[in-house]
Image 1 (cartoon, helix red, strand yellow):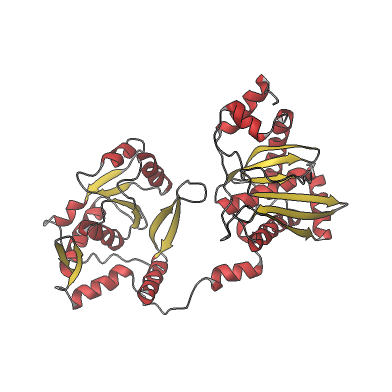
Image 2 (image 1 turned 180 degrees about the vertical axis):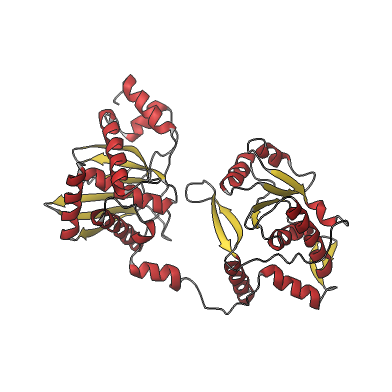
Length: 420
């Protein structure tokens, strides 16, 4: 085992302290640990343009290939700062290389890639396994590799995807080596296509910013926007809460919801939501301001969600049992400044709020405040206004918020009615 020098250790400790494990999405339904490959030739004119533009920038072509790879990883992971394994053209072991794509044009991204590689090369006398062992790390350093040496060795245990770029004159052939348990052949072909599209973008205009959506082929764009959309439905030009209010007027005394031994009629639920909605407006809630609802799933939760919609806010669901740091991250990422919660169930929320400034709380018991009017609020809410933000774990384990407008929410509800 090659022992790290003091300079090596300082470099790697600082480089890895920035964090950064970039996960490759799992786009396969297969099991096992088989390896497969895919190759895609870059058009000769595109390859020549990449070489020409790199020369004009005074940058090595390898930095352009890394910039394109980082752009693809950022699009795949949803994270602007990515870490990939990097193997230089003259060989050596692949080692973690971190590149930020945030707010960069292609030429800026190429410059960042150049600096990243220049910093890494003097400290590459170890393998990733040796690096982890000597630094006492117990996690995979990277799942994707950019291999510019054309290695033929097997993938390391933690590596899911290896991208190669072999050059003949001005021509390039992009190769993808992958684990079939993580990616299937179609996914590998798409990822190779994303790299080709990224290099094509750079060749066309190095001063422009990368456009992640333009990585998709025309066929994949049609699939994403149309093929996966399901049947077209004619939707009423009303929001969900307005349709709910219509049911209240037609069947005010029908039971709307049951929780344990408690029952709530449409009128009772609507009045509670109206009172709570007014309490939100009194606290300065504006259109598309985010309101977190941190309660158990009970009748007051129903009233709270309705109240947020009625008041023109954006519903952010948070389970009260979530860890405090996860709650704090969700509140911060959603720019949430108002939380609806219930008494007796706020331990982790209180801990989270101690680290997030300028967040106020309101108890859902305001729904029972008889001093508030129980009439419908009548706040105008547009179809393209944001309805809710729903956080998922994401491929890296970091919470990511998916945003849904009211029209999409209504379409989703109609689909549920059809399916169920």
